[in-house]
Length: 225
Ligand SMILES: Nc1nc2c(ncn2[C@@H]2O[C@H](COP(=O)(O)OP(=O)(O)OP(=O)(O)O)[C@@H](O)[C@H]2O)c(=O)[nH]1
Ligand SMILES: [Zn+2]
Image (cartoon, rainbow, N blue to C red):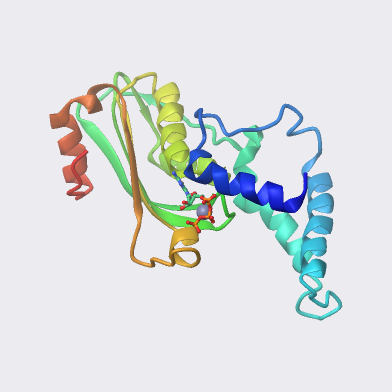
């Protein structure tokens, strides 16, 4: 397909190319290559991009960039694609019978927009109501970090976090709100530095407006959902 036709197709897709299921769209052969093999391949791809742009790859400051970017993609910003990196979430029995909502708020979130491969930076807020099991606090931050380390749309990221915690805690009563800035909106395109995106997923008891209101009060969000 010629380049102009491909560009026209992308134009036509517009905002419709938001993920249609909660799973990150991965091919079945996604993990046939080892991380080392992926880094070697991506390094050549980045070198190509830089060459095409006319950059001098013998320059002292640029020559390490292809390797640096390849390692960053595979081991850091897209490291959460690999299921082996999913955090092991230790759970405990709720012996003290704490029956109220637990909120882990202001979890720092760095992700990458899958449409432009630019950063998403923001905060995630999680709440759950235990039905007998509790999870270590830090594990919620780790789960956010794991799913954030993928090419993402914010809607899917929010839902993946809730589904994972529902699975770990064996309850539907989990909620997540994310408030984040997308550099693809802030630094290019429309270049609106002030706008941010809020997404939410309310499971089980959080569908009740009063329970939801309590959670939003804890995180001081005035937004009406
Ligand atoms: N729903 C959703 N959209 C996103 C997210 N991150 C980026 N986008 C949007 O994805 C869209 C991609 O639209 P296109 O029209 O194909 O891309 P574009 O021509 O670069 O669009 P502009 O950003 O408007 O210049 C843009 O409107 C982005 O703002 C996200 O997490 N969720
Ligand atoms: Zn984007």
